[in-house]
Length: 275
Image 1 (tube, rainbow, N blue to C red):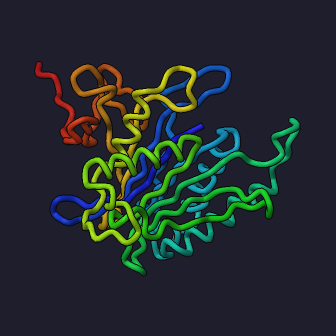
Image 2: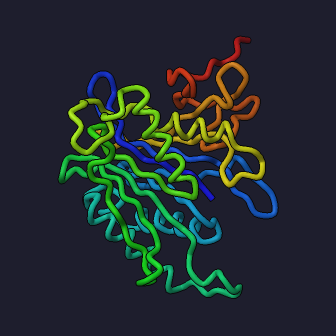
């Protein structure tokens, strides 16, 4: 299973971006803690992550990416985020009709997605949680609108989502007071990296038998409608190595992405060895 969180972040200079962060664990007969769960869609102004059973969710995620890449108006962002989302929903629900179960109990997809990006038409960041409705046997989407207090949009997906949401509320209350998370709160502050801090702490507490694990993986879309990944030192900057997409960067391998210190939340580039 998975813990995925998406939120709109505001920088100190007032710029905004939408991020998706996730754990990196896939489990079955064993555990693989370096599994990419977030992809940058071919159009560069949207990112998408999956949660749930990999056998169903992962091929659907890749087919969505291929469908966007196959049609120029989608690929080049001529079609805005909202009609793109409608196309994605059509792809997902048509794929449900292709599924044939051979094992009792696997007749419906245990899969969910978070889609996030920037709408040039509405000039706003969008976050949509996509989940399978058992009653109507279709994928439907639920847009994130206001979020928590005045902090902004945030959405969780996966079997740890309720735990993480409660931890985020507690973190915000500890830092800014109990009333800051209320619907009628007058406290004016936007999200920075608080949802990532919650994900980080959850991952540091998990063991080999938990449903989430590995390093955090992060992708974002900025207001100039470009997506990018951010690497993370894991388990920390002092004792860890950069992880990108959940995978450790191997010896003699170098990247030009920013690398995040998960504790200070500062970013730096990889230091190349001197000859």
